[in-house]
Image (cartoon, rainbow, N blue to C red):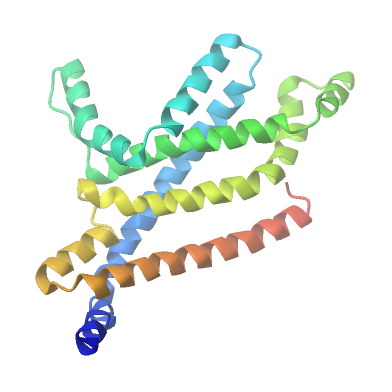
Length: 233
């Protein structure tokens, strides 16, 4: 029994397929970088809209944030890959499809833009009103105040929460194999079909994910601490 368990947990099989697994991990990283860029871009726009003086803009942006914050990534991924192309095909009266990679980026980017927009909103609203009033008294425009006074201070306060959201986003890339993105979980599943040894394969994948996240989190924490201490934010 113990020998069977030892063989099942032997990670040498995972090492044997290391190049295939690393190629899959690269796909996770590509999806993460693209969806993080999309999420951050949308979050900045939505977050700023949520503190706008225009009521209609605030309502629309709040609805957007709540919708995508409360929609599971799994459901959104399936919807974007299977349903969205059908709707666009009907609108265009022509065949339309999304690649698995693009569907994953769109789904995760939109999903996490909802979370990040709340971080942006909270960061901006945490800046004392007196700072804005001081800028207005000096004759500065609201855009200049936002760019030179509010945003630099808000970034410092947003960094810890934003980092946590990006870590969650990277974890979420583990579901993109559902739409056939050849990521690490997809590659491990294909290897398991051939080898029929799920314990070392999926255990190795979990450990690799954990290692990458810990290394990235520690590195970003160090860089962000230096960044803030130097007064760049």
